[in-house]
Length: 339
Ligand code: ADP
Ligand code: MG
Image 1 (cartoon, rainbow, N blue to C red):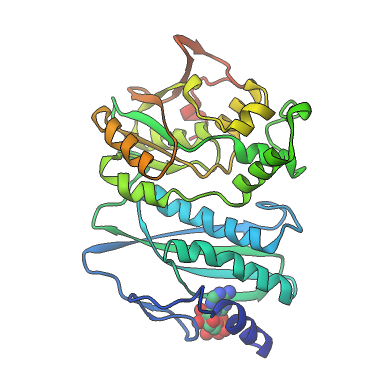
Image 2 (cartoon, rainbow, N blue to C red):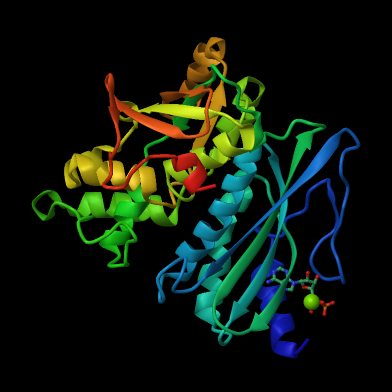
């Protein structure tokens, strides 16, 4: 390792707010590997997300925003497993060391690391195209991790927060959307506060850790929504060997989405957009009240949007009416098609 790399690590990454001490970190940044104490009754959950410049965030995006997004999407995976954040590692490839970029980037990691008491314990730094790889580690009680394959026929389907906002943010960022040329904002309703809201939803998604940990005992199957509701609920039904019925009118939208997009477009954003990082989960009907109470405690909107049924695909209803084509694409055998 060159002198400058050593300096980068000690100045920006091995800093108090980020690589902070915890009872479990026996040895953090600085040796050939980190050493951690894992409580004997718990299991380690590991998850990794790689963010590539120009693919997962716009080239030239602010370093601090890239950092918070990279850590948030990783923590969201821990939320989906109902795992308590434990620590993380960072693989950073960057074109050339730039002090102000590194300063902003490392600062951008601190708030979430602090909020979830998830210290940085190691990583690797290399020269190359800007790519951020984060691996988060979490803890669950033995056999306590939430899996995609645990949905039961008769379960209710829930989502946290509001859907579609991040897909709409891509329009504000002038990024190409895979949702087609008809996917657009209503220019006349667009305002600066709306734009700010959407960008925040894209760059600073809130990992639903607190709710997932508090509600875990009531939840059967769980996933975080990174590829649109249909795709991710599709993973749950496939893994569980069941089908699902959705009531589209119960999908939750933000006030900004309601003001800036047509019904068709915000539905498209929720069903087939991406990057929402809300949780989609199933639970038996008698847990509804406990889950609603739990969500309320965290001031988190929670919506009951459907039901798990026998079968192998997702049917979308509006009221009593079965929609064959709710977003311009057939839902027929959706579960199979997207498996
Ligand atoms: P080695 O040559 O033994 O692989 P490195 O030179 O890659 O070690 O890293 C030295 C120390 O700095 C290690 O403890 C490593 O985990 C840590 N480290 C390197 N890059 C990062 C980074 N981007 N973030 C956090 N820790 C890092
Ligand atoms: Mg190394």
